[in-house]
Amino acid sequence: MAVIGIRAGLKRRVLKLSPPALLGLFYLCFVAIGAVLLRLPFSNHGDVYFLDAFFTSMSAVTVTGLTVVDTGGDFTVIGQIVIAALIQLGGLGIITFAVFVLTALGVPVGLGQRLMLREDLNQSNFADLFQLVKMVFIVAMGCEAAGTVLLASVFVPELGWSDGLWFSIFHAVSAFNNAGFSLWPDSLTRYATNPIVNLVVPILFIVGGLGFVVLNDLYRKRRWRRMTLHTKIMLTGTGVLILFAWVMFASLEWSNRETLGAFDSWGARIMVSWFQAVTPRTAGFNTVDYGEVTDATALMTMTLMLIGAGSTSTAGGIKVTTFAVLILATIAFFRRRSELNCFGRSLGIDEVMKVLALTVVSIITIFVSLFVISITHDGSFRALAFEVASAFGTVGLSMGATAELDTTGRIVIMAVMFFGRVGPLTLGFFLATHSHVRVRYPPGQVFLG
Image (cartoon, rainbow, N blue to C red; front, side, top):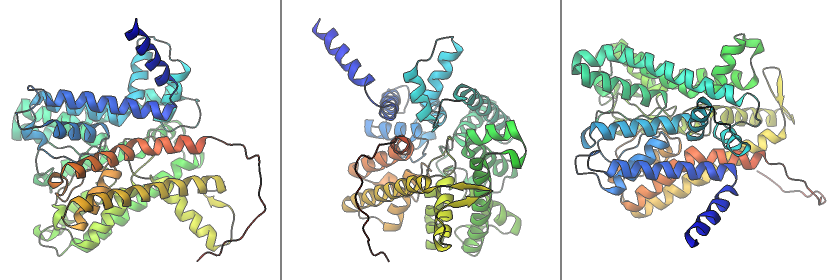
């Protein structure tokens, strides 16, 4: 009876948690389950300790891609299947996945589940939630299936049917979910000039990173003038950032003999630059060694990783729309305007305050994490900053420092990955909660600048 009472009390406490807290709890539970599965003998070849398994599980559920062991060499096929499943759950959203299964089985979904689903999809209301969930799975399964077929045309002739098909499935799932996990220790560097890989993989993580709200809007409205402001900002911002990164990476690394300079033809260098321009948008794959890039390229890449991609997507970062609103707010300030105007629509002070709050919390998280890691690790500061930015943006690009971190450093990176995936949802829920101001104080003045 005592055990039943304890269980009932625990259940009541869990149900009293806010939707973001429940969402974070679900993510942690799946991380723990994944860690246990990856630690079992049939999942690895014996050289994976529990902390390694937990780190890998956290990286997979948060669709980051940072690793401390060799995914293809240290894990068996069963372990790799577990990682792919964790990536799929983390990328599409655990609650989204659960609600889809319940709906398919005809089980009614209550208000509590709808609240968690709303937070998981980063939505402000309940309208069209289930249609959006359906859209998520149709797009995900379709893109991953198409990606598997196209990648198989490259991998199967080289690896044979069994290995080639599995490698195609794994990398298609990893690419669409912006996870960055690869079964090769050097990621996709061996395919740096392969046109199919350089086309299929980027398209997968660009589509996955746009956000399902954008994809749904594109499908339903199809005309630019009828699209929402969010969709217009996402498409424009994504295009501008990709073009900027493409030109800048090519310019900065063109003569670097350790990166682009290693390729003889102009076409190859442009192709490799294209891949490196899009992968910092939380994708995590690479076809050059980022440990050899110049300081300017590293700084540009860290900036792109922190910006990330779109809301309600498989990607991380502060999001393109957040970055766009920051730029628009700065322009409005210098033009002495109290409203932000974009594509014939206006944004008020509330949106600016939310963006500032998210940005400040993100910056504090990054700096505190970097400070703690730098206390216990004597490695290159550039490499440490790169790893922290990659973890927060759930990207997975690495300069090799993550595998060299001690226990404290790895725990910090895991916490950053978790916050990078779940934290913005929790903060967004807090910002969406309206409070009633009962007391007003007389205005004051603070001198700025």
